[in-house]
Length: 358
Image (cartoon, rainbow, N blue to C red; front, side, top):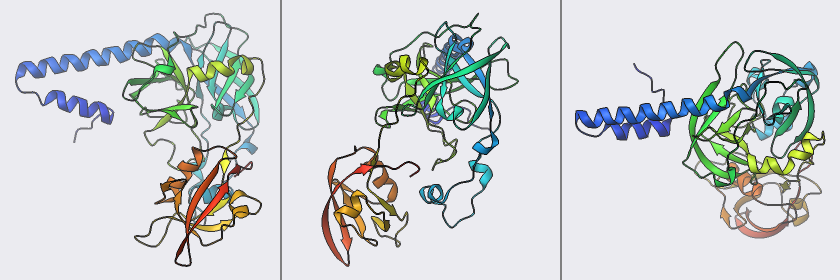
């Protein structure tokens, strides 16, 4: 049985090409795909020398089991999940040289926890000690500095403001023991995600290539792959990845390079624990518990209420509700329709700020 090695969107594109009739058409289509292949390889080659391996010596106490709150958020409370699935691997990660002075950007997740020591291995195999500078938790990026920056060069910068869904994207990274850079290829599938702090790409992302360079088809840097987590709902390699866009990075660059951290933005919080499941065929989110001193509690929501409409959007499941809350800001006043004792009731709620650890 043969395996399709092309990303799904590209595979469909290829299938359409090869559906043309006639030998001439097939030859022409093959030439088109070979040209695309060559273009991707050349684009990756332009940034390969700017992509480095990042080794992190992390205190083992940083690896902790899932908390009850995390299990609840992941839908695992009461179950026995494989702890290994949610444990961070010990191998190296990826970073990108972004200036000629030895500054490297990587994902904030890569440098979270208690860090003892960091060093990088460049494209030529040279090992260099690195110092952690500042970070921005909103973009999930962190800056590193190597004192010996001889031979390091930054990639050509692209314009991430002009990214549109459907355009090609290439994620370039490194892995231990490989001379050549690693490449995953796909498309930009969405922009302005996570409060405009990320764009979404259909490039396979994993623990090793997070922190890598997301580039366009011309080899120009568009962003840093980020937002991977070992506390994620959909898994570490679902086929969907996120990247911190370059134009947003530029806004905080001088701050984090100076060794300062950008404050984490407050996110909206309603104050309920909701069930992910209702009776078969039912729609909505049943409230298991209303948390005290929150917007939901102050508005008079009760345990057992079923949320039907949230801020004008029909709520069919828990994920829909969570996504709608993420679109809003602290202090927003919204209308929620709940079902209680067989009756529907409209409740006005003022959203608060999400507490740390929630």
